Image (cartoon, rainbow, N blue to C red):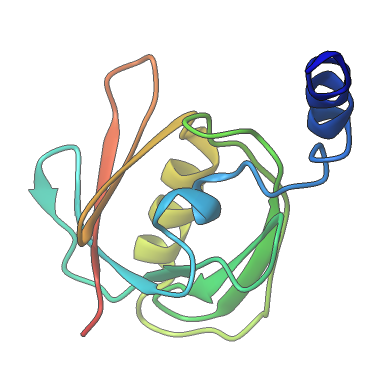
Length: 130
């Protein structure tokens, strides 16, 4: 019995490399399509994926993008966001999308809905693609 009690704290030390981002809490292995920002429909097309631990990727209205995500769930912090450089009629929507995505600080997954929000009351609602 004493060995088991001593082993439990050691076991938790070896689990530190486990993915603690939103991807591990129901958002991974899906493509998320942006539905609305701050309660208003987002008319352009934008997606969000979690292709591997600590990474995000997707398609904005004009370009594909990727970035780093390393905040533990429910926190959300995008870093090192990069995108391709194609031009299209949706560049204004794309700028709005990237600015909103970078500003998000919290995440919540509920079934096929992913909500990103921040302390200023801004919110992005994504739905899982079918």
